Structures are given as C-alpha cells and as structure tokens.
Amino acid sequence: MTVAFKNPKNRACMLVEQQFNWAHNAVRAICERGNSLLRTTFKTLRNASLCPWIISRITAAALVILHIEHGRTT
Image 1 (cartoon, rainbow, N blue to C red):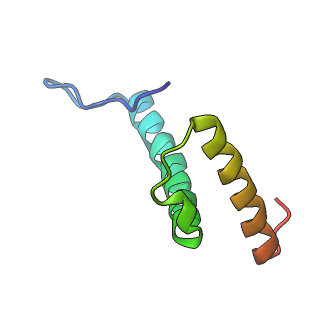
Image 2 (image 1 turned 135 degrees about the horizontal axis):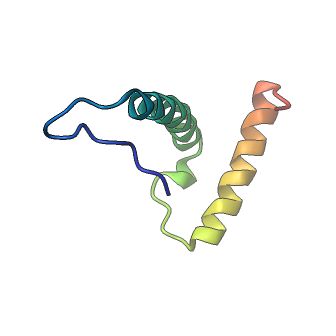
C-alpha cells in the first residue's frame, strides 16, 4: 500500500514527492468518482456489511450493469 508523502516539518516537498502526490491525487479522484457513481446508482452498495469477497462480486456485477446502461465497453 502506498501513502502520499506529507510535507516535512522543516522543508518543502522534493520534486519527486510532488509528482508522486499529484499522480496519487489524480488516480484517487477518478476512483472516488467511480465509487460515488456506484453507490448512488445501486442502493445495495450504500450500507453493505458483508464479507469483502461477496462485496467485491456484487460491485463487479454492478459495474458491468452500469457499463451496459451507459453503452461503454471499456
């Protein structure tokens, strides 16, 4: 699991750390929008408290249904 770099106390982030943070935030934003879309579309995913394996299967099925509804193949 990767964690975004924090600003050190006595210095600014190095260029590599800034690039990593930017890339991390960009990917996270896409994932958050997708998660939001799935949870608002399918009420089952809002308060699910099942086994993670079962939740992942339900989420995968919901994602396939959502892609079919929106006419997307990728």
